[in-house]
Length: 268
Length: 285
Image (cartoon, rainbow over all chains, first blue to last red; front, side):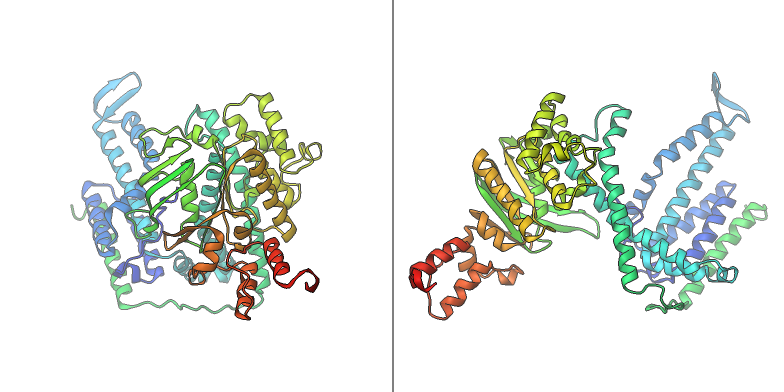
């Protein structure tokens, strides 16, 4: 449990780590759009290259990046199976009862799989190279225009940073409760599904109670320090764009351009 | 020997940037009926060490034998191991979950394969042993009884399956002074009446001095001292480890500086009083 890497920040000294969080968020937006535009093997190859270059520059071990794929492995498998066996259109290679495997289906399934893996790896690269704090700072800064329509940007940002901040705390809490119940002979790994779900109750109930207790304490601490007493809070670390941010953005836009050109069939 | 630890080492999050060695080459043994204290600054590996004893943390390197079960073996019967060990975590009241106090205390016995009737009677026994009014609390929700009662209910939860070894991690944390004393008296009387082995992790040196026969000191993931409380508090410098000295020992040391030597084996208030009366004569106290 303790070893879970949920795309958790991986400290390294690299260009990617030093990029402004807003740059990374914008690039990931560009990247997500690009991956959804991919329709040919060439386009996926281009996305793959972009991803590999980003990973190499970030100096994060490939293994800990691949670990993030493990979290969606189940969804990945289901997607592939459904698309492969039930796609329907095209020349069948193999068919049995309602199951029909076609070249078209295989192609589509592999595209879906690649898209999913690329999305997960690409976005987790952002969270692996950015601390939760600067990530929410970046989001708050990017959402600033929404203030014009009275959207509570700062409140949303603080809610997000609290949520991120408390993931490890709650993991710790789960770990502690699990250990305590295991010490009393609880068994979480055997029996049928219903038995296993029932076995989770002794974890979920104390966790629920603890979560409310922690939230209550936090609210009290925020109040005690006069949180929100002043309308305009200043920041200790002020975000600023650098030359490398512009270069990185240009690089990602170039990548998007390639994908668009491939999509409308001008190249490839 | 009930617990035998040999060259035990443990590292958290191996092969990640968060890698941290928690225990390094620890060896010691615990005998039946002993009251052992484990002390050390925060992060010295105390919790990691005790969680090895009932297999909550899997052995990485070294040897560990608890209640004649070899934890280095390929297949370990954890259920049998855990049945013999009652482990009480810090703030154990946060682990209560059932609808009623009685059901919560019965959780352990039922997990360890007792029948409903057996579980019920041993839970009742445990609740009474823990100092609770059985009829008053048994049908109440563990969330609505008082803090002190919650802690007692949690203790009853581990006493209910009658373990041979009790392992307590900061059992008095968060209790008021009288609650602390009651808790420790309960533990110490349990040990005397049923001959249980007790291992207690604590930051409170007064408690260690008063109740433990033997102390193990951890520092920087290593076992530094394995000795008696008197020996530890008088002969070793533990202030550098971030550990306090019991009040009784402070008083004795201050008196010695003033030229009044009462000896170096006094760690409890009773003994201090006894020596003081012997030194000054009864009428002058």
